[in-house]
Amino acid sequence: MSPQWGHGPGVAERPPRTGDKMPRGKTPQSARARASAKCRAMKMHTPASSFPAMGRMLALAMLTLLALPACGDDGATDEQLQTVENQRRQLEQQVGALETEVTQLKAQLAQQEQESNANQAQNQALSAQLADIAQQLTEARALLESQDWEGVYTQLTAARSELDALRAKLAATDGSLELNAAFVFGGTPLTLGQTYTTSGGASVSFSQVRYWLSNVTLLKQDGSTAALADSYHLMEVINAQSVEGTVDPVTLPANRRESVLARAVPAGAYAGIRFSIGVDPTYNDNLSRQSGELHILQNMTSVSWMWFTSYIFTKTHGTFQPAGGAQNTFTWDTGTNANYRTVEFAFDSAVTVNSQKRLTVNLRADVANLLTSLNPATTPTIGASQGAASTTLSDNFAGMFSVVSVENPDR
Image (tube, rainbow, N blue to C red; front, side, top):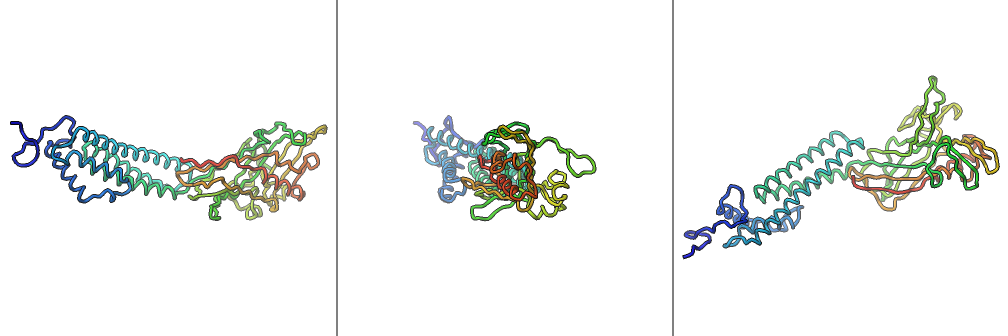
């Protein structure tokens, strides 16, 4: 008479089939009994709707892992065992996905630390939190190997919760802004000494172009603003030049400055940007005050410019030759408080600034616009005493900017 396989007193336990899954170190009977108990406990005490952030799919996957090997008198079929293996792989994929997320966040924190003035203690705390999450995922992998499904689920749920909390912190952490303003003449990059043709057929070349880009401010959708601290930047394309008014000779090296990296930008959503050309009266009327790059050794003040009592806002020097005429030099400088100008651009769509999102604003600074309504042949010199011409030139500086692109990718 063939033996009757099943459960209970006097009934033989079914021999293990090929492919049966069981905890390491357990007999088929003890493995099935433990899984069966888990199955009953889950059915009685853990409805799928009670599982938190990992989601209903992961909850159902664990229920399947607990139930299939143990529920039913005749044991699991090969098809059920394959289903269990597929669900185990899903859990393993969840672990891998969270490990990848932790690796990405580590890289973002490292980059943020390099690019911004982030608080060192804050960075250390965030890094420690990431290390704790990584340890939880390491333990989850070990529990996968031992087929402790409840343990895996518990570790994954805790890791996801901590990652969500960490991402919320990073979303509220200061970010950075890269502002680029490329010097061009028309559609061509500006090169000192190169001859360009104006719309009127004259020839012009430049020996230097310099201006103060100041008070960079990001504009929020609700109309409020976030002004960036110490925002005074000297943009320039120059050859080497001696600094005026120093006892010992000082030489500025040749330089091309078209980019500003603003650190510690307040986290938030922004709809536009504003900046000024020149130096506001707070600093222009008192050269002893310093902020950002403001300094008399920048060669943007001199004895010939109001006796070192204010900054020169813009410098445009070069040569000009009208069609059929003689070539002459021109020197155009502005710098009175009346020459201070502000430029504002709205973004096509809102951008986000924080430790996980980059913001890069690319502008074009078209020097050809400086010649609008001004002719170096008839106005070779512009300074503090040429009020009307300096007003026009200041307006032209403000009008030379246009937006090329706004980039807001993840770090």
